[in-house]
Image 1: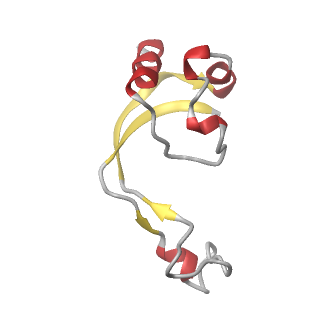
Image 2 (image 1 turned 60 degrees about the horizontal axis):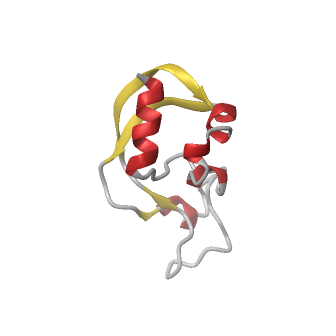
Image 3 (image 1 turned 180 degrees about the vertical axis):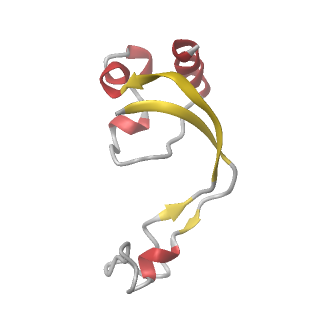
Length: 93
């Protein structure tokens, strides 16, 4: 597990329709339409990384100590600040 590529978020977040669909694998019976829990964004592929930047390495890097991934481990799309992005980009180059 780790960083294998770069993508750019190209839409605002919106409520994931599947959480309300009883026929969907992703149906969540505890969610109310007026207060959704699950959200979706569209992303656009930017590039594949030359090597995988392992999760173990990310966790051991002081410059990335506040990365949201470490607090919410199930995130597949997460924001990074410019300082974190500059560090990650330099490591991947």
